[in-house]
Length: 250
Ligand SMILES: Nc1ncnc2c1ncn2[C@@H]1O[C@H](COP(=O)(O)OP(=O)(O)OP(=O)(O)O)[C@@H](O)[C@H]1O
Ligand SMILES: [Mg+2]
Image (cartoon, rainbow, N blue to C red; front, side, top):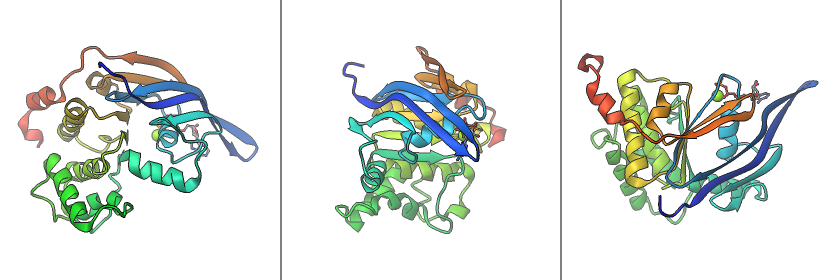
């Protein structure tokens, strides 16, 4: 990468949860910097602090201590409303359970993040949502409702929704956790395309160690601390794996 733009900087982030008499140290001092165009996996055993970290990164939770700069802005100094605006403008979320509105069409689901921006007309909203759905291969499912689509299709809608605002960062928590092998690699192919063609910055929490081979960087968390942080020189192609899978799994 010729010019490195800093997207995320964490400085000694701590998150304690007080439960009754006990304090759980979910994050015990996490520091790292993520630059534009990185595709990062975050791994670690259950309870190691991955979701807590993702919630901090997504401005859904406030750390007990430490500094978080998102796209150069100190999140700590912001009020609740500013933080919500920042979240809506700069972050796209993809969840394991898709989190789409039921009985609502694909286009309406994808239009949702644009509703909070009064500068965008309803016509532009529709056009951007339609384009985002076409980009994830759902141009022929625009009016399908969430319950009329497969799991993989619903996750594509969720990806289109995460992208429609052109966020600086995409956060995914076990985005392929509920999908079969073939569909997982379809979603992974899509994310690699976002990463390689559009230089999107993606942070992907997963339990599946195999996925690290498809990303550019792997951060492992253990007991609320970074255990390792390594760069992957030979990124495997999800598309190649997809093409090598037996067809009958479809
Ligand atoms: N709201 C909460 N209140 C109290 N303790 C919590 C809360 N959320 C998480 N914890 C604790 O913080 C620690 C880290 O939890 P976290 O959900 O971040 O783990 P995780 O790595 O995402 O695990 P998993 O792989 O099972 O999703 C755990 O010990 C958990 O019990
Ligand atoms: Mg979790």
